[in-house]
Length: 67
Image 1: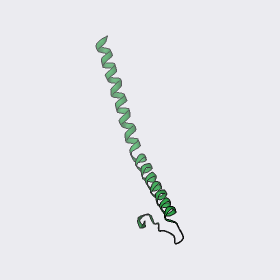
Image 2: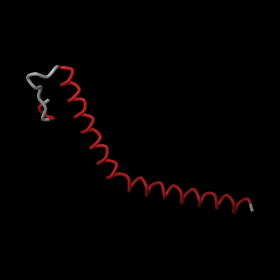
Image 3: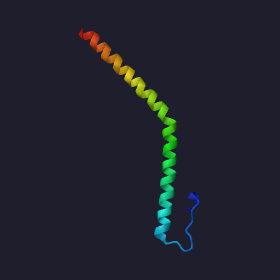
Image 4: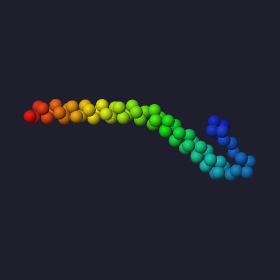
């Protein structure tokens, strides 16, 4: 797997090489997920806060109508 910087070693069984490739792919995926989570987490939190504020306002408006 040249894109991962991996190559089979001369004495390495194909199962062992496959396991190394799978591990490298999982590590790459996990790093990309962490990067995306760090990028989007602040935006997600802001959106959640907007939803909470809108929900409180809706509840207050509903309470005013029922009073």
